[in-house]
Amino acid sequence: EVEDLSEFDQALAAELDIILLDNMSLEDMREAVCRRNATGQGIPLLEASGGITFETLRTVAETGVDRISLGALTHSVRALDISLLIELPG
Image (cartoon, rainbow, N blue to C red; front, side, top):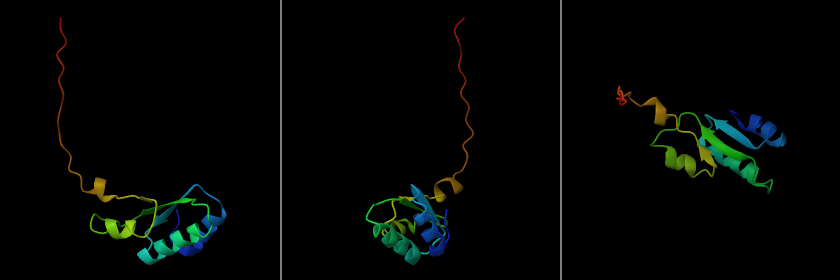
């Protein structure tokens, strides 16, 4: 997990499989994608996370990141209280 381009450069040098871009601006995400692509390897995978909403999902995807974590999927879920009763024969 990195929060800025300086941390990203350190993670990139460590040759990791995936780097989580946490709460980065769209501009910084685009730059991280460019720096990763400049290696010519297509790795590590880049995952955007933090503060992403359904409204910003498309613009984040357009930065070129490989994956997006969308906390809004679980933050806004309302619980449904149900039960299942099974009657066994005999």
